[in-house]
Amino acid sequence: MEVRATTTAPAECGADTIAIAVFGDEGVAHDTPGGELGALLDSGEAKRGYKKLALTHADGLRWLLVGMGRREELDAERARVVAALAHGRAVELGAQTLCWELPHHVGDDIAAALVEGTALAAYRFARYKSTGGDEDGNGLKALIVSAHHDVSIPVARAEIVTAAQNAARDLQNAPANELTPTRLGEHAQELAEGLDGVSATVQGRDAIAAYGMGAFAAVAQGSVQEPALITLRYEGPSAAGPLLGFVGKAVTFDSGGISLKPAAKMHEMKFDMSGGAAVIEAIGAIARLRLPVRVLGVVGATENMPGGRALKPGDIVTAMNGTTIEVNNTDAEGRLVLADCLAHAVSLGAERIVDLATLTGAIIVALGSTHAGLIGNDDAWCAAVEAAADASGELVWRLPRHPEYADLIKGTYADIVNATENRKAASITAAEFLARFVGETPWAHVDIAGTAWSLGRPYAKKGGSGFGVRLLVELAAGAAREP
Image (cartoon, rainbow, N blue to C red; front, side, top):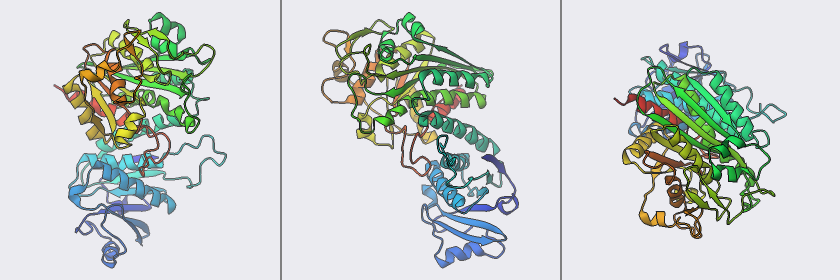
């Protein structure tokens, strides 16, 4: 779908369908010559309430009046939602080109959000459908954002970031027999080859063992699929500031290993690579935006399978930094992979680290699909992550740390255990485990288990959501703005 901004009036920009926002007790800013839009409101057929849509025709065009509720309640997330709803209605009507008239007196974040909501709602994963997934027709060919002033910069930025988010969704939605660790590594290399300033290396089982990554290697040993340690580097033009480390968990299928998961919904465990997908595609977007930052990406990709060589409950493994780990539950494998990836990022010089992982089911119980969990060892860095989350609309909620939580992971036979025997503070104790592998480096852990797929929102109802791409791009953009 082509996306562009214009200062041409909506009726003159070549669109066949025009979306007009209406607020609270406000009228239509620019009515049609015949007054059809005002008449639709006066009749009560069109309503100003949030998410209310009404259609009329005038001057050979379709006009969608989109209720936004009270103006003071408008934010970027509301704009994403109504944009997704307007997209759905436009597609039902057979629209080819949709033009949004940007409401008066709003910021660039709203212009960007209209693009994000539309492009995310337009996403389809139809690779395996014999019909080609064309049940909605061919969909929109173009989206235009019309404004009195030039909004081409936020619109173009939103197009780039949303395309990366949809690319992450493609990775998430692919079946595990296609998206193996090897294939994910190849994808990262293909991405890097097409972007200035980006390089990618992929290393397998032998290199993982040679680095001393005993925890990562232990998870991978149960699968016949070769694991992949994916390392991406981006050096932006005139880059300055700290080396940002983005670490992603990419368990391309998680059976639970010997501690086998229940059969119900096990098919969803192809999504256990969502953190890694977000890291890879976010770095791609950062490169396309040419942000003046330095980023190191480390993604640990493997399957977690039960087999004759699989990791067993009670085994003890040694991580890259020398920490010994007693494995109480092989389904707590993500933290084993991340432990070595975090230590690797530190060894490669990362000065600020954020990891994204579908780590614990407990975070879904605590926060649902509204917020991801955040925990870290540095208040300033966590505040930067929170600010990026708020700006991007990919929300996080910070959880506490306390010595009592750290005590819960003390091992009986090794330094630490990978899973506590009770279920107390499971998301926090998982993060306490990870904290052992970053030393004094400022670090933030984002648990995306509740937000990575099937958000139920109009722009991401089912399947992979690509959560984390917008957050990481905004985090990098914030670092670029620092003096």
